[in-house]
Image (cartoon, rainbow, N blue to C red; front, side, top):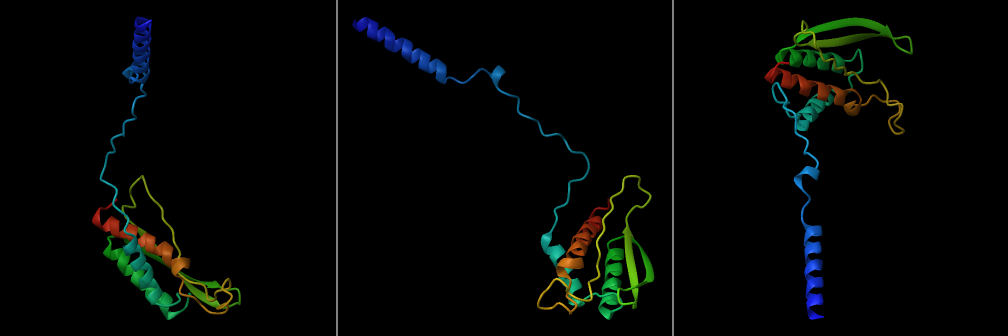
Length: 168
């Protein structure tokens, strides 16, 4: 009887060891490999730099078309983009506002390597509205446009800054 118990314990121990042993390597799924990426490394986006570009725009005041702040901010944007190596084209004209007033408008187009076949197109508007119609407290006032106009251009200028360091 003692021999039967010993044999039973041995068989149980071997079965437990076999059950707990790692599976053969053939059954393990292959680990995916990370593909090699060619070209220069992707630069790190600096949110503090983008934020500083937004702050600079807001410092001009509300950038309502026709205002001194609009003209000054546009001039700053053109100078900044040229400093970052962009070819800058300005399109100027006038539009009729909702109240019949004629307003000057200005598109600023920056390009790097316009002859390249593979291109990236980024847009952002840099002007602000003449009133804050969605704000209950300041409904009839112009606002600084940090989140409307400023934030998109802040990102855009941060990308331009990287283009100056490593042209596309």
